[in-house]
Length: 448
Image (cartoon, rainbow, N blue to C red; front, top):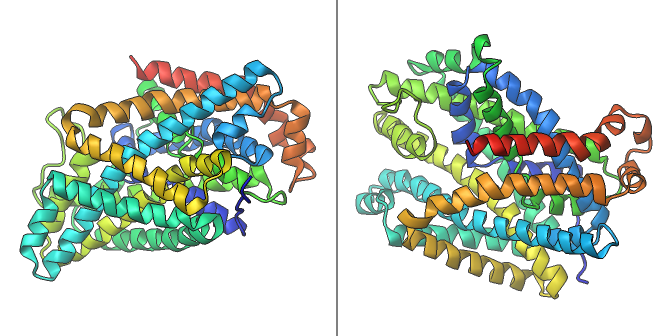
């Protein structure tokens, strides 16, 4: 077997795992979900569920990963000696691999959109108006080229390995991401209408706390924001050192991810209401705040355009933020198939990165060519069906395939006093029964 990489420091792992968790959904999805579901009431429920639902599932992936020291397919297949569990592990591992590949195939397209939107204001500032117009307009050639560039960047980083690739670039990109975010928050707070957005975001509507819709939305956001269910955190866990305290590391990742999502809300909600103060439409025909692509590609660009030259610089900073967030998530997704190719098929890492990236780019090309027919379907199948079901499976594997003594032995590494901790008294039972039940409940409710 090829020599496995390892994170060289705790901060390297934390920034890499947070980079995987912090994606476009944190920036464009979380703030508008909060605003549409009672503001601070949603925040409160989300923060609670992040630790009662997402954190236990994250710990399942990290524990399996470090115990197995292998890619997602091998790790799950070797957890239990029985032939039936071996087959089940292979099936779930291949399922996680497939979902990761298809998520990255559409995510690469979206990262390409972000790159185009980043380059467009740069072209405007350089007086390259024809180039800026081409970058602004949706077209097959633009989308394919931008997707190819972002795919190439992801492949280059992954090809360099864990320490020199994933860790090195995460420790550069994540601080840059946070500094850009803070800078934009400071500027937007000075604009008319920002306080209205803050009020919507931070003042709780306590009557909504018992709303099943709010609880369901918060539960889904808490689970999906940590990029659980596709094996990325399992693989990152397999690169942790034996001296690392897993429960503490998992809690730190959860705190960093939820903290970033909250901070992103301090930018997006005030920016939406600043746009409204400028006369820009920010509500849909049904009265809901615009979210997702409509927010990113209509509302905010219109706001930046209304600000003249300052708006061009803001657009440059904002889409740099979005591009970095997209890239850090793409890195972790590509590591899923690359680790399989390296460890199961003996392919060297640079070649594995190129081959995996090329296959995913070809799938992306097909999706771009047939965008109207299959783009939404791929997103639905992977994120709404694949991720929650795989999340249930990973919890069950951690709770049932690993013997309690094996769990204790693994978690004692880096935490010799674990057995007397509150975590150990709760988590083994929780990951066996409660967490799978909560995730399945969320999944069933989302189908209605």
